[in-house]
Image (cartoon, rainbow, N blue to C red):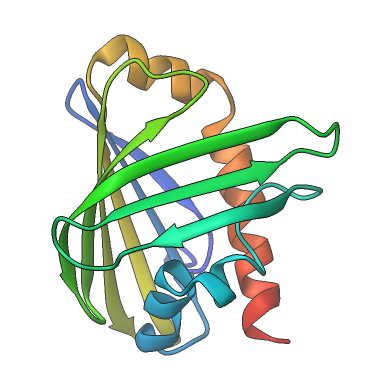
Length: 157
């Protein structure tokens, strides 16, 4: 049986990517880690990056904007609109990048109880197959593995 706490990535049609990863924390805490600025700032972004802006209006129709500073001082921004917020089970939002914006990506996070804590399933629907393939080739698996290891460390602080 596969380890639910290891990242698993699969394709969903021509536009989708589905990622699953387990965490040893209650789903309310995992949900909050994705939606509360004071928590998100402590783990979000690749190793060596710092979140400098974390604006969240957590409601359907509410916006978010994140800016992360890379180790070389370059800022990377992302923004979007929440379409659905159902604590602690589900968040649906659009996502765009300020420096590269080939169109909106629709992201759905589902937080489910499992026998070791929480199973997070993230589905990303890209605006085209070319965009999806570019994201995959740019190192999605490596960056998400790193990101979720930082989230694991946050839960054990």
